[in-house]
Amino acid sequence: MTATLTDFQAAGFPMGAEPLVALDLVDTQALCLDPVRDLIADEAEHARWWALQADRLPDAAPPAISATRRLRALLRSLFEAALTGATPDPALVADLNAVAAAVPTSPRLDGWGAQARASVRWHDDYNGHPALAAIAGESIRLLADPERLGKLRACANPACSMMFLAENKRRMWCAANVCGNRARVARHYEKTRG
Ligand SMILES: [Zn+2]
Image (cartoon, rainbow, N blue to C red; front, side):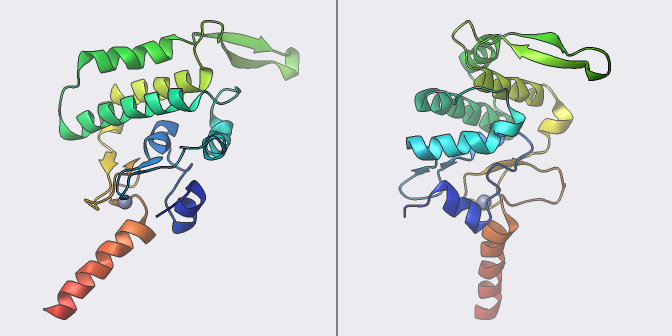
């Protein structure tokens, strides 16, 4: 199977639509496919994924694929630990903090008078990447917010690797029309067979 990011979107997986970029990032690794499919494996797909997220991240050229993947693996480990009630290796938490700390921010006044706007300046002069730091930052806020973290779920389809934030308490599936449908069809099959 050569599913691409576009195929996943067309199938109804909410790529680029999770409330947190961090979850969209984790979901670019489709562990449910055999062989495992990395939706950002080539330059073009990687750039397309970052373009999807551009509106909600600081303005910057995409990082190297290896850096994106490193953060993705780190986030999956931490989110899986949160989901299973495990305590992750403290080195993983230190890594997350380091990604966030690599790009400090400061408040910045743009314009004056009626045009005055408070914005954020991302200091990327320390070899960090602003978008990766922003994703690490939102992940830190999620992991430190028990109520919100309680909404973190893995798709109820055991064969699916997607994670999401169930802002609707009843959400069980990454995509109702993909994994939800599959489950409905399976249930129907069981019933009619019995
Ligand atoms: Zn799913």
